[in-house]
Image (cartoon, rainbow, N blue to C red):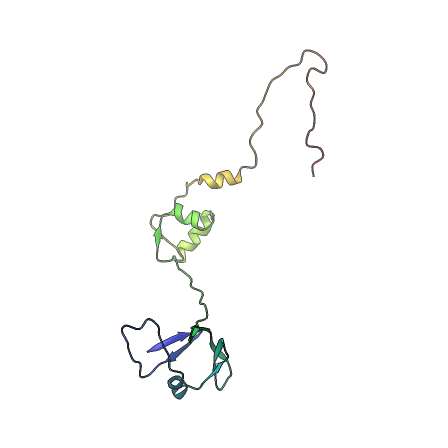
Length: 159
């Protein structure tokens, strides 16, 4: 049996199976007799080190009467390469990427599209994102006398 701690794999020999036990236990004497490891214990902390390089392999904290190994966290990356989706889904997943980028990614098998790329696809969100302002409403208001209509700049100076 092998256990994975940090970036190392530690082989365990002479493993005993106890079906009703709720925890996985490791014998320190068994581990140090088969592998060149040094265990350092304090009242609430321990470290497993490689005897030759002095590199810390694993650490842990005391939990009740046992010392628990806390494995180093691993970054897990999910690849969507093998998940097929239509063009519209990939366009949205990839931050509304342009047609050329999706073409490139499909050609290099970075993404898998169910249907081919439509040249005439228009994304509503992209269109709204490109719109900078609404057009002004044109009002034809003719004034009959002077000062019947006053224009005020309420905003002030703008950069």
